[in-house]
Length: 253
Image (tube, rainbow, N blue to C red; front, side, top):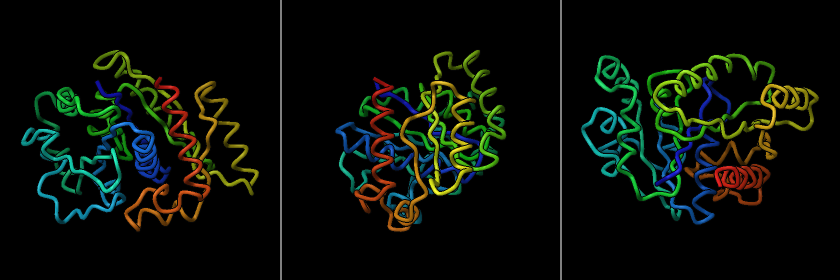
């Protein structure tokens, strides 16, 4: 049975897709058979792993609409042990269709129920509290929450935590916040340190020791269709995600 981790924050621009790609890459590097599910209609995790979205015949849209099984849309990547369930912007239209559908909250959970091929499944969620995000939270055992070290970092997180609480009461009682991952840390500014302290106060005992810095190589890697560890394994960004992935694996046990 795979361990399912949703990487979620309803705010955009917090490093959610970057975290999904790079954590999944390092899980795979450590020998875990890993599936990354691109569940964000922007499809950035798909292009971030070098996949041409134009050439895709089947995507997560087909899975959610019940027109294909998950294993029929999964593709191998060029990175050992790492597979991808890709998405394109069509997924946004799917959400509209889903709104009236039966079992609309558990489509992803049902799709994952028959998957025995992986040790870890990482879900890259959309930057909103949408039907897709809720599907991801219901399908997952754990949530990794990337939070950027910037002024409005904690704004809106109450709403996400409230949604998680509701999901725990109903459709997924075992959902757990595995940890909070501080991203875009800039050691040259006092603000980063202040926000980091604030995050630790807000989430006592839940903040990962590894923090993700602002890093040029990290920003460049997606345009080359690569995780940062494959693009420049000695960069600060690569070392940070390697440490974060190890922490996640330790916490998952």
